[in-house]
Length: 303
Image (cartoon, rainbow, N blue to C red):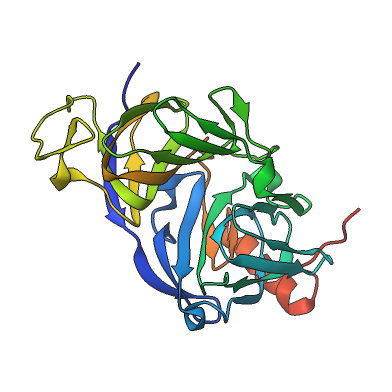
């Protein structure tokens, strides 16, 4: 067994997107090879409806998959193929844009005015860039939830974990997407496929993600639930942690516990040509996509 080292940590940055939605971007548009097969990760949340109600009006996608996970409020969506629906709290949508789709996503608040969700973009290999669009809408009740003896809770959205399989399937990057909560002061180790790239995104509480060279109890300052926690080294709210190679990650929860997403996928290792919501392999393919948008042939017939 080998613990994955922490390669980098950074805090998501405030960004305006869509029609003026205020969100935080953990990564995207720069160094796509660092998170391959993932391209972008956004955290959109707030309790001021004016910060997000303008939403994400009609826009195109080609060559990628978008994964939307809603924690509070809702996101209504519709597209050029006639699909429409609403994602509520705990729901997930995995959209394969493939050859091209036009859609819009409009956030709405819960009774307290709150909205919280994430969107992750996953790349498609060249062989699937022009595949037919596909949706997988998953209700919260259909996502397996595992509760360990110590109170650790894992929602298995995609992939297999602790004997449970997530409901989303047939994804090119063969990903694992987990929503993990670890109680205060607990130290836990989670298996990750050795051949997949992996990152964690902390959105509640804080934790230290330990390297193999960091034994429990080193340079610790505060005792929580009978264990000491290195307060100085905790990764807190809106922190993305990128891991190196290995087959497990170790996390030490802070004084308020921690909730984070643990995401991994098989790298595609192909050239990336990127223009806004369209990601292809070459500049010529990007130019073709722009021409298709101009002449009305961006949306291909679905057979």
